[in-house]
Image (cartoon, rainbow, N blue to C red; front, side, top):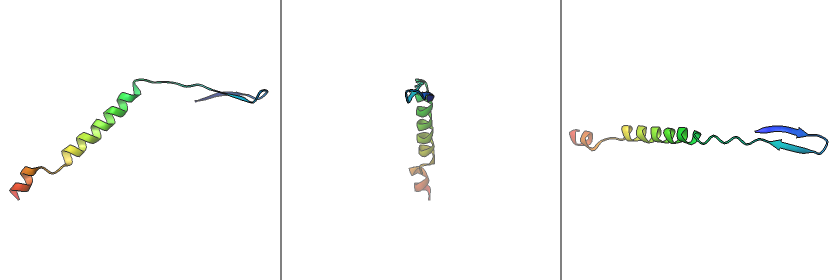
Length: 50
């Protein structure tokens, strides 16, 4: 994240924010997509009945 700039010296200051728990939100999204794909996958039982 951009913080400020020193126009006299031409130096820009940046601030880094680390949120370690955000990775669990991404993991939850991956698990949600994986579960959706598994649920939508056609089962062998339905193929045998047809």
